[in-house]
Image (cartoon, one colour):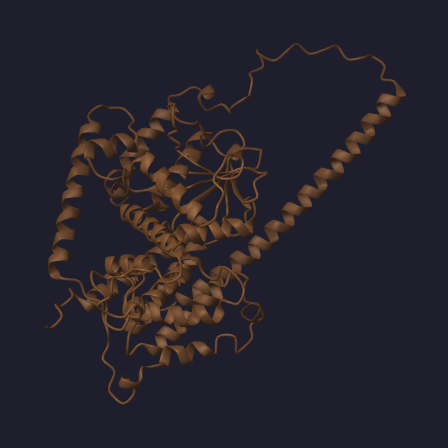
Amino acid sequence: MLDIDANSKYHNKKHLDKLLKVLARAGLTKSSLFRSSHSEGWHLYLFFDEPISSAELHHQLVAMLKLNDFVVSKGQLEVFPNPGKNSQGMGLRLPLQHGFAWLDKRTLDVDYYREEMSPTKALTYFLDLLDSDANPYKAFRQLKAHVLDLESKREKAKLPPGQGSNVVPLRSPASLPDNDDGHLVTTVFGHLPPGINVENWCRGRQFSIEGLTGPSQRAEAIFCLNHYLFYGDPSRNLPAMGYGFEEERDWAVKEFLEARHNGHSSDISRGRADALEQSARAAHWRPPSKRDTEPRTYTATRPISWIRANENKKRDARQKIQHALDSLKKLGRSFTTVELEEHSDVSRRTLYKHEDIWRQDYEDLAAGFFASCIHEYNAVVEAASSESLPPSTVSQKITPPGLLAARRIVSEISMRAKRDIRKSFRQKESVQDDSAKTWQAKVAVLTTASPPTLSTGEIKALLFVLPGYLSVAPYEEDATALLPYVQHLRRELAMRTGPPRPCPE
């Protein structure tokens, strides 16, 4: 967890965006931002789907931040858990306490206030983020490799002129992929696809996750997104749209940027016809060697052995979860997901992937448990019962004129402030309603056709565009309604493509 105090020089949108970009380059693409308390400080949580040594993670994060010129010190930027030097470690404020709130990383607005939720609902929201925003364990390995690469570059920069390395490379350094980008590409594909530009592919992947993050990025995003979609992304279950899918790729890029330009492109916001005109040129571009030949569709394939191994792991995990659930149900009491995770011996991410096995039993037992509790169990922190309040004082029988006038002034000021707050709240709700209606109308148009009636190229394009709309759904109900359609598209594409065939040697 990264702690940024309210008085820190990093407590602003500019430095937060820089911090998120630095973390993303190191492989930590997922994070959750919270307000720690009424002091307005920030807590940026980095979750992982597997246990990781806190001491080693602290060391790697501090080194990475310092190598990117961040000042890691108390009051500016701190990393927790902090094991300390000669103590048991430094303490931090736990989440979900008084003043805690969920923040939007793009706008820094408050999404939810802790005081507006019951303890059960607040804990459920937090645990859901812990699962959905969890970084894979390979991101930790990528972080360590990224830190080593930064340290080696820093050491090379310190060498005097003319005293570089005496090692002669076997091939041109320009043909070698960048250390962290090349590692990511080979990890995702299992090999280096022919003709891929790892830097452009990784940049396109970042755009597909975050959208535009600043001005003057439209042209770069169009080029990199086309390159990214050409090869696809097996790690995000995104099919490749290579030669033969130029029209679908062009449409997907345009739809994505219209939905995720995040206000950083004034031409797109104004609806200018030529704002995305270069997307067609980027989609139809071919290298000289391919311009006079019939294009061959590129598809990213996986070995049959990988698919079989994944299916075996999935079956074993489901059996472990089912056995653990049966043993916990025999106890006849409510259980936590932590207990189920320990009994089944699977990771939390795997547990939530197969929540269809245990979710209903978990909710039924939890509902019965809370129904049997007294009302004081869910009492708000710092609230006091009527018996513990101090005795009321006897008011004066006759109020002096000066005191009465002062009370009227205070009451009027208070009423005006409340009216302003209500007016601001109504305006904000109106803007949200308009945005929600626009989102719903756009998604309704995109999901009109039944998946079996669509072409393979149209399905691939929708599988890139719709998850972007899913990530910015205005309400949970909207996301819940869109998700089955996306899943139907994936099943339809899997039925058409079938199991991957081994590449000919």
